[in-house]
Image (cartoon, rainbow, N blue to C red; front, side, top):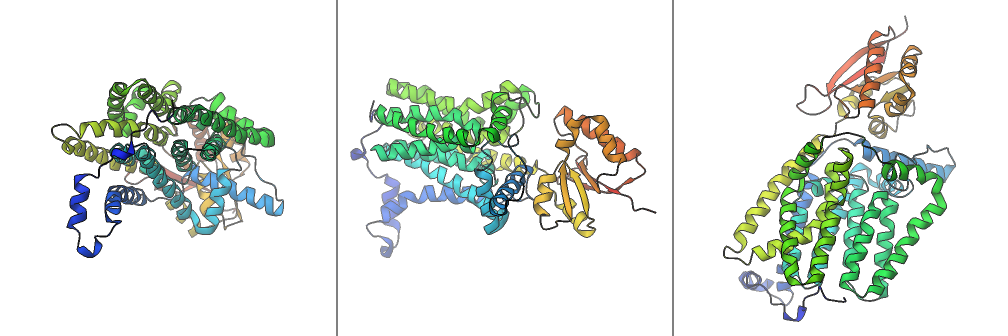
Length: 499
């Protein structure tokens, strides 16, 4: 099946627009490399657009971001000084020592902006890999349109502004597909290494590994896919042998026995998916329908890409899981983009040429702009709480549903220690009431809005009632947790001063 998907690159002819632009430039810019740089201009423009759309998003550290960075700092400190480190086995979707340590190292060098900047670089790299994979197979036009379809997706823009493992895993998957199209055993080893690191960074990323190996098998001899598969098995296998006790709980909690953390109806999830990647799904389905005309290998290619694109959405729909649903659509975009690029390329050869393609891409841009903004603004801002604490800091134990975010921003205040409500509520109603009666906390910081998880809402209701009934605590501040929201408020309860 070697090279059956590749077009002959010998027959490639430079587009008319490239010649026109190259000749229209001033004579001092008309050198031998000018056509190549003109050909790269659309991709450069897409990268700049993606960077601008991601960089416009700004907020304090989200809980997920802060959790990983705080844990990474804890592990680094433990390795350097031997200090005790908290066990994070069931809190992470990947090996606790992998991405968190990398994020902490970046945070040490440049703060949250550098960690988020690394995510942006990963998403930009993934865009380049999407283009290069198809271009190296002889599908330059399709590759450029696939890169555009990938870039103009709200979840992809969101992933580029989020300091989590998602952007890195997406970049590794895209890079593995690109190296998988190269010749030689060396590229097979690199492909296997990249794919082997995917489940280390994110356990659920393992579902993409066989799909990627199938894609490699279709573009190059089968022995390369076999070699890549053997190499890919080494990394998660080694991680399991070394740290099985630390990661087993995380694998069970996040994958094997996963239950919905935030239960959402199927209709609502379907509506979110339509807003996030609806245009991409429609164009990719068109690509799946067109590909069989090119032969059985292309049919299988379409099935594999569609399977990769719909794997996580289908899992969320089955579980009714709303947590991380939007950001996981970025993985879908990676696999659906080549199909969409193929369909858009075929559409651009019709009577109206680029007009319908331009309309579709502009529409996708509008949805991408709106959805990335909506996803980012749905995460709460802890800045009002930070201002409140910094204006009147008191030593003691603080508890909050956003403890990780607050701990990250206040990590230089050792007199304040943090606990999370997620560890208090499972202890039961009486334990919550006793914690208030014993005045265990100096400050309690809660959100008035629902958490989306019934057990958490029930625990918070008990804690709020206990605080309001207690003679030891008083509500000292109430501030919006999100912009322009009158129902989602930060409630700050502080222990009263002793008479």
